[in-house]
Length: 470
Image (cartoon, rainbow, N blue to C red; front, side, top):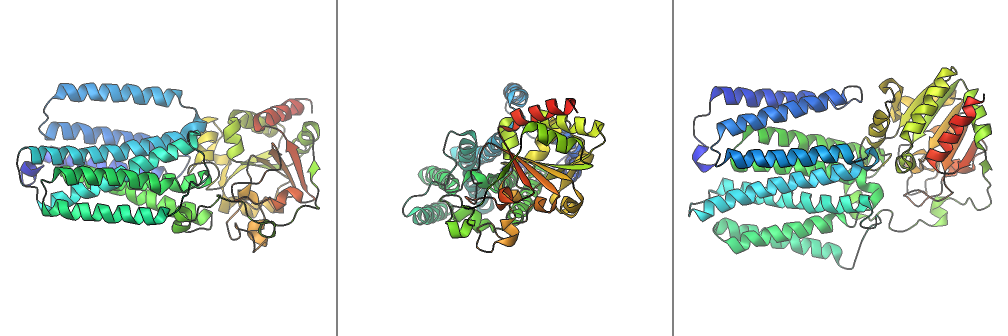
């Protein structure tokens, strides 16, 4: 890095970096729509390939052989994971990849620090600050993402993990890191201090995520994705690579915007998500609404199939229950059968349904549901009043009318899919358990709501079989 700061860079390399950065931007824009997301992902992959090849041609490489071996091993592992991991496990995979991205950025900083200090060279202030920033953000992203992965995978319990003086310990760790960073700036050759800030930042990442409940993972994954981009951008300053700086900044900015969208979809602020321990305890009856004297109406698959088959319009609302049951293919089959009977079928997607941003879109895309049938919350809410039947599969809080009507509810003000305005609502659910917010769903007790109890995949399969008889 130090030798190449003022060196001559071939024009062809710079043009390749410019092309890669442009493709990153275009690809990111196309990922904003399900219809163009695959093309955007492909453009991003091409851009990364161009950036990697240009960097290998530009920089002095100690051993192309070792790099090719590493690429081969990484490509093999990545291909295996992509092939083996089920679409329902995509939140865990995204969390894992975020963490590995943060670790890679941190290792770049560690490697550069070791290279400079081991040769007895002086580390300039700007380079030192870039290394410290990359270590801090990269390590927090790594360990934080590993905790998120463990929560989503069931290795750790998904509920918030809290203990006495937790925030005090966090503050002390950050103060310790700041002190260690100041000492490192004063004496860049302080190896012990450098190891110390690495250990502290790794601990901060763990304590940063464990107090957050599993239901808040869409926000956490978005934020960690943003941090992985910032870490990459900081690593770009460490090695003075323009395309890494630009691409990291793009990921950081887009991840932060997505985080804000997720918070808005839950009507909560980012500090509230990170520090409130939401979902740690159930709310009181007064907050949740008293449904003890109310009854629910049940429906069997045969009657449900009749309602769906003779409806003019049906809106399907997928939720995390559909993901857990891996029922997306069965849902697609049911949708196709209804369309063949002349029923207009649409899918209503809530921004935070599932365990990562776009979780429902990913599952439905994997089942080849046409993009034209997918509607986001703002577009579909105006159409519920003219909908004959809404079929809710494993969704809970995102369709709870208490968010609109009960000011005492913890979810009051949260934007929801207004399914209660439809003419009829059918809910496929295993039981009457509350959602992540710990609030009973008022929708389940309304006169025009019918409960179809059972697993999502099993019930949707039975509905499809019944539809064949109509």
